[in-house]
Image (cartoon, rainbow, N blue to C red):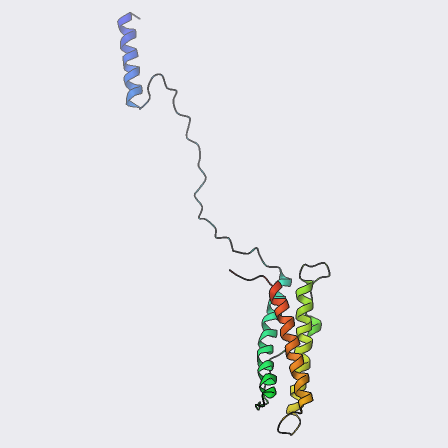
Length: 168
């Protein structure tokens, strides 16, 4: 092959490379790599998954809070001299059913909720006994017992509430 032919072949190669976007002094690009499929971002919850124990304690807290509101209204009203009607009371969770494993970080919450359940059960039983007694107004000693029970339950619920995780 003569010099002119070598120059012509080189020019053709240079033109071919320039047409493909490559300059003769640059190496060809690496072979394309497979990129991972774009996956939609997964929204992560603001809290880690709650444990079944904590979920049970949260349900107990909500039920106890509802019972506390009703019973507190009754006993606080009676203490102010108001009358209260007998009727259906909300169910108070059984104190024996409120628990957390002994090594659980939730034992303090469970203990506070158990105490609230004991006090609300006492308050509810007092009210049911008064409803079964035909008299206009409970005596002051009974009203004081009912008040002490609902107030102690309120203290225990506030203690449990301070330890329960809350949503932002």
